[in-house]
Length: 113
Figure 1: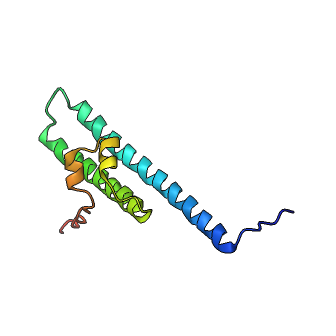
Figure 2: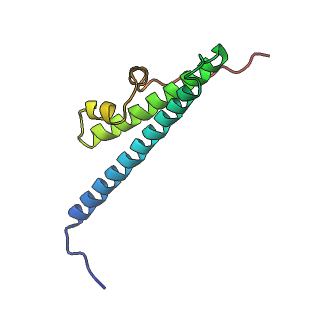
């Protein structure tokens, strides 16, 4: 049996840092995936203008990417990483996604009877 001789506070600090790194990875992956879905949508309609009926679907993708961006930025800031310019460049975040960062769509109203 091996016994860890480190003070409990050091063990706890290690676990916290490990979880922060894991959370950053998850949030970064979520941002990448949401941006990829938006880019795929845009690529599908690149040669032809997206019909008006598809605009709500695109807006939803932009809002989802904005929410993922917000979650990633908040997690980074909680970890002490404050400069978001690196994120915007590295992930090539579109301006429209940046502008809706953190916006939460209003819940849809139930259908009237």
